Amino acid sequence: MTRLTALILPLLLFAGLAGAAPKDTYYNVEVLVVEHRLPDLEGGETWVKTDLTDLVTELRQAGQETNTGSETSVLGRAGTKLAKDGKHRVLVHRHWTQQGQAKSDTKPVRLQNGEKTLDGVARVYQISRSLYLDLNIALTVEKLRLDRPDDAKSPVFRLQEHRRIKLQEIHYFDHPRFGVLVRVMPVGKN
Image (cartoon, rainbow, N blue to C red; front, side, top):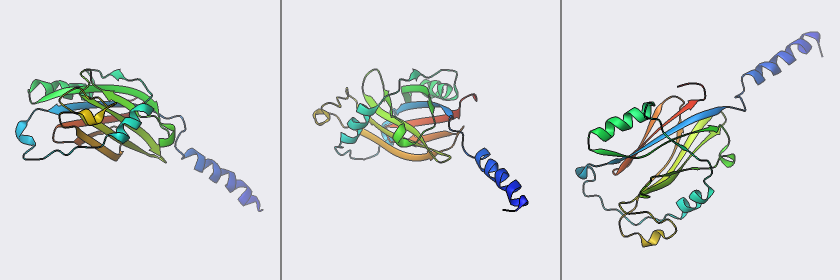
């Protein structure tokens, strides 16, 4: 090995390590779910009975506790404005802090409103340097009984999404009956 190679090799190795994503990256995740109260929005859509087996499985895996979202946060202010117009109702506003980990190491976070008409999970995870979000949410007009989903008398409205997300951006997930706003920030940034 030449002297030049002996000098350059450690520098190249160090440069590669310096560019790698930090292992202990934490994120603040905020989720706002709003119901659309716009009767003409649905049009003539027919709602089919949906299988909730995968949602029930994810709910059993859900781990992390969440906090009620702050009214002064960006999504909190958006929820307040939407609720004031009478055409929307805030169903869930939650936030939590989590480590950026692989999907297999991340538990879904449960999203449920007090009336139990909305139930579901959100999972934020990291693949390489990219963040992804999986949403699996069900909404009904009556109390949702996921232990006996076949007993539901009213339609169950379902939103299942998988999307790559960017930090510090607001992401919107749409359904004719409800919408979900999500914002992920690195810890230490507002």
